[in-house]
Amino acid sequence: NAGVTQTPKFQVLKTGQSMTLQCAQDMNHEYMSWYRQDPGMGLRLIHYSVGAGITDQGEVPNGYNVSRSTTEDFPLRLLSAAPSQTSVYFCASSLTGLGYNEQFFGPGTRLTVL
Amino acid sequence: GQQLNQSPQSMFIQEGEDVSMNCTSSSIFNTWLWYKQDPGEGPVLLIALYKAGELTSNGRLTAQFGITRKDSFLNISASIPSDVGIYFCAGQGTYKYIFGTGTRLKVLA
Image (cartoon, rainbow over the protein chains, first blue to last red):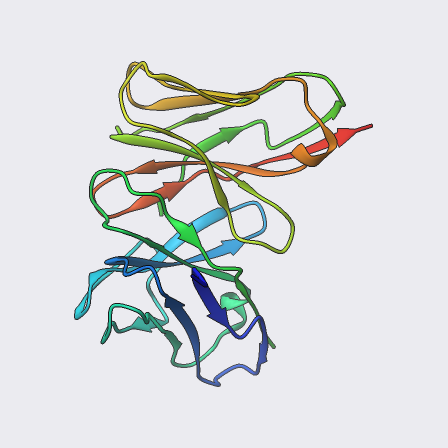
Protein backbone atom coordinates (compact mmCIF):
# COMPACT_ATOMS: atom_id res chain seq x y z
CA ASN A 1 0.00 0.00 0.00
CA ALA A 2 1.20 3.49 -0.83
CA GLY A 3 -0.92 4.94 2.02
CA VAL A 4 -1.82 8.61 1.56
CA THR A 5 -0.11 10.37 -1.34
CA GLN A 6 -0.09 14.07 -2.12
CA THR A 7 1.04 16.00 -5.18
CA PRO A 8 2.78 18.29 -5.74
CA LYS A 9 5.30 18.44 -2.88
CA PHE A 10 6.07 22.10 -3.54
CA GLN A 11 4.19 24.82 -5.41
CA VAL A 12 4.64 28.54 -5.94
CA LEU A 13 1.66 30.57 -7.15
CA LYS A 14 1.00 34.18 -7.92
CA THR A 15 -1.89 35.98 -6.26
CA GLY A 16 -5.11 35.25 -8.11
CA GLN A 17 -3.98 31.99 -9.71
CA SER A 18 -5.94 28.82 -9.18
CA MET A 19 -4.69 25.31 -8.60
CA THR A 20 -5.66 21.90 -7.29
CA LEU A 21 -3.79 19.96 -4.62
CA GLN A 22 -4.16 16.25 -5.17
CA CYS A 23 -4.67 13.64 -2.46
CA ALA A 24 -5.20 9.92 -2.90
CA GLN A 25 -5.36 6.92 -0.58
CA ASP A 26 -5.37 3.21 -1.36
CA MET A 27 -6.65 1.91 1.99
CA ASN A 28 -10.36 2.06 1.12
CA HIS A 29 -10.89 4.68 3.83
CA GLU A 30 -14.25 6.42 3.98
CA TYR A 31 -13.06 9.51 5.85
CA MET A 32 -10.64 12.00 4.28
CA SER A 33 -9.67 15.48 5.35
CA TRP A 34 -7.50 18.47 4.54
CA TYR A 35 -5.52 20.52 7.05
CA ARG A 36 -3.29 23.53 6.79
CA GLN A 37 -0.31 24.00 9.09
CA ASP A 38 1.07 27.43 9.84
CA PRO A 39 3.99 28.19 12.18
CA GLY A 40 2.85 28.12 15.80
CA MET A 41 -0.73 27.26 14.80
CA GLY A 42 -0.78 23.50 14.71
CA LEU A 43 -3.07 21.88 12.14
CA ARG A 44 -6.41 23.42 11.27
CA LEU A 45 -9.16 21.50 9.51
CA ILE A 46 -10.19 22.96 6.14
CA HIS A 47 -12.69 20.44 4.74
CA TYR A 48 -13.52 16.82 5.31
CA SER A 49 -15.45 14.02 3.65
CA VAL A 50 -17.17 11.03 5.23
CA GLY A 51 -17.57 9.19 1.94
CA ALA A 52 -17.83 9.55 -1.82
CA GLY A 53 -20.19 12.40 -2.68
CA ILE A 54 -20.26 13.82 0.87
CA THR A 55 -18.15 16.78 1.99
CA ASP A 56 -18.40 19.34 4.77
CA GLN A 57 -16.59 22.38 6.07
CA GLY A 58 -13.99 22.39 8.80
CA GLU A 59 -12.71 25.33 10.82
CA VAL A 60 -11.09 27.35 8.02
CA PRO A 61 -12.92 26.59 4.73
CA ASN A 62 -12.93 30.04 3.12
CA GLY A 63 -11.05 30.20 -0.16
CA TYR A 64 -11.03 26.42 -0.67
CA ASN A 65 -13.31 23.97 -2.46
CA VAL A 66 -13.36 20.19 -2.34
CA SER A 67 -15.17 17.33 -4.02
CA ARG A 68 -15.18 13.57 -3.49
CA SER A 69 -16.21 11.72 -6.61
CA THR A 70 -14.41 8.49 -5.65
CA THR A 71 -13.42 6.85 -2.37
CA GLU A 72 -9.74 7.14 -3.29
CA ASP A 73 -9.38 10.81 -4.24
CA PHE A 74 -10.04 14.06 -2.38
CA PRO A 75 -8.65 17.10 -4.25
CA LEU A 76 -8.45 20.56 -2.69
CA ARG A 77 -9.00 23.54 -5.00
CA LEU A 78 -7.78 27.08 -4.47
CA LEU A 79 -9.94 29.23 -6.74
CA SER A 80 -8.02 32.50 -6.42
CA ALA A 81 -4.85 32.15 -4.38
CA ALA A 82 -3.99 34.77 -1.77
CA PRO A 83 -0.75 35.28 0.21
CA SER A 84 -2.66 34.28 3.37
CA GLN A 85 -2.95 30.79 1.88
CA THR A 86 0.81 30.30 2.03
CA SER A 87 1.08 27.22 4.23
CA VAL A 88 1.82 23.53 4.39
CA TYR A 89 -1.20 21.44 3.44
CA PHE A 90 -1.76 17.92 4.74
CA CYS A 91 -4.27 15.38 3.60
CA ALA A 92 -5.32 12.59 5.97
CA SER A 93 -7.57 9.56 5.86
CA SER A 94 -9.10 7.09 8.29
CA LEU A 95 -11.47 4.17 8.04
CA THR A 96 -14.39 6.25 9.31
CA GLY A 97 -14.80 9.58 11.07
CA LEU A 98 -16.76 8.13 13.98
CA GLY A 99 -15.47 6.41 17.06
CA TYR A 100 -11.76 6.09 16.89
CA ASN A 101 -9.90 5.08 13.76
CA GLU A 102 -6.29 6.08 13.24
CA GLN A 103 -5.77 8.96 10.84
CA PHE A 104 -2.93 8.53 8.37
CA PHE A 105 -1.32 11.68 7.02
CA GLY A 106 0.27 12.34 3.66
CA PRO A 107 3.72 13.96 3.36
CA GLY A 108 2.32 17.45 2.74
CA THR A 109 2.32 20.09 0.01
CA ARG A 110 4.29 23.26 0.67
CA LEU A 111 2.51 26.17 -1.01
CA THR A 112 3.82 29.69 -1.39
CA VAL A 113 1.60 32.44 -2.78
CA LEU A 114 3.44 35.55 -3.94
CA GLY B 1 -11.27 28.33 14.79
CA GLN B 2 -11.04 26.23 17.91
CA GLN B 3 -7.63 24.97 18.94
CA LEU B 4 -6.38 23.18 21.97
CA ASN B 5 -4.00 24.89 24.40
CA GLN B 6 -0.79 22.93 24.49
CA SER B 7 2.16 23.60 26.77
CA PRO B 8 5.01 24.13 26.83
CA GLN B 9 5.52 25.58 23.36
CA SER B 10 9.09 24.34 23.24
CA MET B 11 11.53 22.39 25.39
CA PHE B 12 15.27 21.87 25.38
CA ILE B 13 16.31 18.85 27.42
CA GLN B 14 19.37 16.69 28.00
CA GLU B 15 19.43 13.16 26.67
CA GLY B 16 18.14 10.79 29.34
CA GLU B 17 15.79 13.30 30.97
CA ASP B 18 12.05 12.78 31.26
CA VAL B 19 9.64 15.11 29.45
CA SER B 20 6.08 16.11 30.23
CA MET B 21 3.65 18.11 28.11
CA ASN B 22 -0.05 18.75 28.42
CA CYS B 23 -3.09 19.85 26.52
CA THR B 24 -6.29 21.55 27.68
CA SER B 25 -9.57 22.37 26.02
CA SER B 26 -12.74 24.28 26.81
CA SER B 27 -14.69 21.47 25.10
CA ILE B 28 -15.19 17.84 25.98
CA PHE B 29 -13.74 15.22 23.64
CA ASN B 30 -14.53 11.53 23.38
CA THR B 31 -11.04 10.63 22.21
CA TRP B 32 -7.65 12.21 22.80
CA LEU B 33 -4.72 11.57 20.48
CA TRP B 34 -1.02 12.32 20.59
CA TYR B 35 1.02 12.69 17.38
CA LYS B 36 4.68 13.32 16.56
CA GLN B 37 5.81 15.22 13.49
CA ASP B 38 9.34 14.96 12.12
CA PRO B 39 10.68 17.77 9.91
CA GLY B 40 9.21 17.71 6.41
CA GLU B 41 6.73 14.95 7.16
CA GLY B 42 3.15 14.50 8.23
CA PRO B 43 2.15 13.70 11.82
CA VAL B 44 2.30 10.10 12.99
CA LEU B 45 0.07 8.72 15.72
CA LEU B 46 1.79 7.85 19.01
CA ILE B 47 -1.03 7.09 21.44
CA ALA B 48 -4.84 7.12 21.38
CA LEU B 49 -6.98 7.46 24.51
CA TYR B 50 -10.63 6.44 24.54
CA LYS B 51 -11.93 6.75 28.10
CA ALA B 52 -11.80 9.45 30.77
CA GLY B 53 -9.13 8.58 33.32
CA GLU B 54 -7.42 6.12 30.98
CA LEU B 55 -3.64 5.81 31.31
CA THR B 56 -1.91 4.24 28.30
CA SER B 57 1.73 3.44 27.58
CA ASN B 58 3.61 2.85 24.35
CA GLY B 59 7.23 2.02 25.12
CA ARG B 60 8.77 5.09 26.77
CA LEU B 61 5.60 7.11 26.19
CA THR B 62 2.75 7.41 28.68
CA ALA B 63 -0.40 9.43 28.16
CA GLN B 64 -3.52 10.06 30.22
CA PHE B 65 -7.05 11.11 29.33
CA GLY B 66 -8.21 13.60 31.96
CA ILE B 67 -11.20 12.79 34.15
CA THR B 68 -13.04 15.92 32.98
CA ARG B 69 -12.43 14.88 29.32
CA LYS B 70 -11.01 18.36 28.74
CA ASP B 71 -7.33 17.62 29.13
CA SER B 72 -4.55 15.14 28.51
CA PHE B 73 -0.85 14.82 29.19
CA LEU B 74 2.04 13.00 27.53
CA ASN B 75 5.20 11.87 29.29
CA ILE B 76 8.36 10.67 27.58
CA SER B 77 10.84 8.89 29.80
CA ALA B 78 14.61 8.67 29.29
CA SER B 79 14.64 10.87 26.18
CA ILE B 80 16.90 10.00 23.26
CA PRO B 81 18.04 12.13 20.29
CA SER B 82 15.42 10.68 17.94
CA ASP B 83 12.66 12.06 20.19
CA VAL B 84 13.33 15.44 18.56
CA GLY B 85 10.28 16.77 16.75
CA ILE B 86 6.97 18.48 17.28
CA TYR B 87 4.36 16.77 19.44
CA PHE B 88 0.69 17.52 18.89
CA CYS B 89 -2.34 16.63 20.93
CA ALA B 90 -5.69 16.29 19.20
CA GLY B 91 -9.25 15.88 20.40
CA GLN B 92 -11.77 14.02 18.31
CA GLY B 93 -15.36 15.21 18.08
CA THR B 94 -17.96 14.02 15.59
CA TYR B 95 -16.12 13.81 12.26
CA LYS B 96 -13.70 16.53 13.33
CA TYR B 97 -10.25 16.48 14.86
CA ILE B 98 -9.04 19.59 16.68
CA PHE B 99 -5.28 19.91 17.09
CA GLY B 100 -3.15 21.63 19.68
CA THR B 101 -0.53 24.20 18.75
CA GLY B 102 2.32 21.76 19.31
CA THR B 103 5.30 21.30 21.63
CA ARG B 104 8.67 21.52 19.89
CA LEU B 105 11.15 19.19 21.60
CA LYS B 106 14.91 19.38 21.22
CA VAL B 107 17.18 16.84 22.87
CA LEU B 108 20.77 17.74 23.61
CA ALA B 109 23.20 14.82 23.53
